[in-house]
Image (cartoon, rainbow, N blue to C red):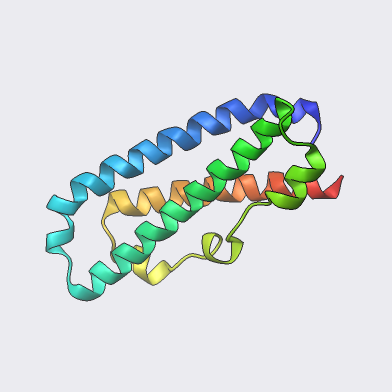
Length: 131
């Protein structure tokens, strides 16, 4: 990734932080309001998809922090590319459409937002390895 791309990282970092805060707030509130209303099967799906959101956002944040370390000189691009690739693509790029269709609307929105963000970072990660 060249220096032109560094300009976009603060925006992605801020977007990721906001989405993390949104997810945290939702999961905290939903624990009392929505989770008790779910069937056992729905609760399993809910927990699974909540974990997928958390994994997506954690992987994105780790990737962004590695890129920041490159920008400030703590890591070389080669080190970041080798040691800090975007993780968990198999889980994070998959979607459980049946589960998503029965989950609460706000949960579906978080799934969509986290999926879209993860996809964008995956494309950036791929670009870093094309150079």
